[in-house]
Length: 243
Length: 393
Image (tube, rainbow over all chains, first blue to last red; front, side, top):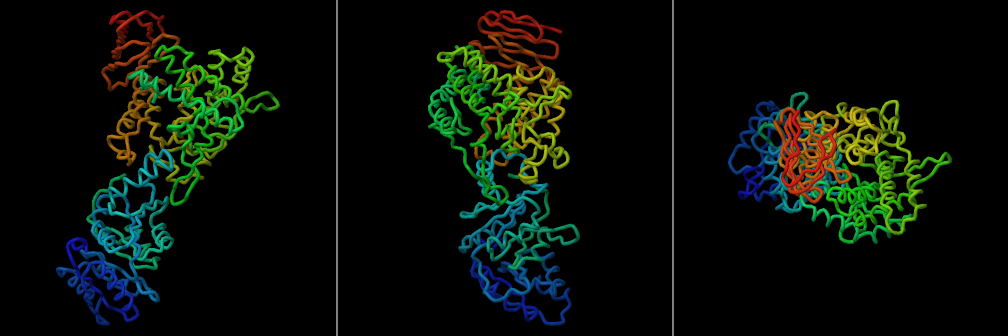
């Protein structure tokens, strides 16, 4: 989806696995396809396929030209598949949580947590633009923690306004995007803000590393979020502290 | 800002003082609205002279009240100090600024509370350290008020009776200031020493906006401070603090200062230089110098931090070079960092253009006309047209 976001229509791969997840996965893919301007391509995974083989099929299908992203079940029963796909995919992967049912999926509001690094901003830029062009409201979340707290903060009204303008200009220069600032642990705030903002999807740039101690935000979002989580690969790089 | 502007462009500094003079009516109205006498100047001022400080802002997803407009009252004494500094530095006639001294003194005279023992207090203020709000007897505020009252009494302008001047002097003498002779420390405000003894090194590497890291409530319960507070007295009114108290207060408050205010590094550099620690001062000065060029605030795009730039000037001129003007005499008392071979400055004071050339073993003062000047510890001498007052050690 990254390169396809502004480059014309692109298809969305719907990975149909366990029967109880088929409908929400297909519906989520359809909603995203409306934004990408492409079609939904279904990939059905046969029951009994080993996780390695299933993941391999998904990755090969994702690699096909004209494919924006993949959508697959993200719950615990499917972990062996999605964790392999997410760690190896070169394109965004949308993981649909267990129990997503009832209301048809929608994409009115997107939560976009950003850590203030050029790398994560670059990773999500095209997706953010595509969502905005599709009419979705972008809510950018940045959490001040020990590694990201500003050095200086002269006054809450003036500093907040100036810092917010600059952060959005640098990391999410999409018209209409607004910034929510929080203080504390990012992993704890992402799900909380997604709920408070009634976000329909959480979009996260990540390093594709799930070993212990890595990707706490991704882990928490996948564990607790009640909405689909889009994981966008970002090349590992040194972070900076801006703005 | 004003000290820097007065030394670079005295006419512009004069305009800054006239800006305040022309808004005395609004300041008087504010004082009356608070049930006080005299004039109370606004924390944030614009064209009309009314307080335009925002009343709320966002902090970590919560809407919070911004109380500086209501309670950071030391601005009233700061305005008086700036006017007096302008007059002293430029050699202007004091009567021009006297209304700023007297009307602010009247405000403070009506603001102080006398307890049964005859001690004067100022309750419910915010000092330069804005992490602690609505505190009582903030040492910076009280000592600045003491200076304000004494300066107004000494000015003895029109409309001031000897009795009123005497009352100001008595009130100044009775103001609580939190000084402890045993330690040489001023308590930042009543109860500060009893707060959680948190040091900045316990939470982060400074500079850090500690309120954004730990939350406002946690910081308010601790001894962490945003910027020099007590120590601003040693910078602005060194004659009003106990002799020899800079060192003990720097040693105590320095490790508690987060420098979360963009004004903090430069003024700390000035203080460190005056305390005889020019190499530490240079480290802080470098941080101040990098603040905008390196965008350490993350918001330089919104504009340069002018108070930091003014502070840098003060760190170099007042701190490193030790330039002061007192009673029509320019005094110089340099403290150069080891990394500097020398320091050359050009500035204006007392109606003259001055050139200062300082190295580790030599100080030269030159001026474009007669100027009473003194090197530290020496008697004043008159520097004549581009002549040199030189000392080699």
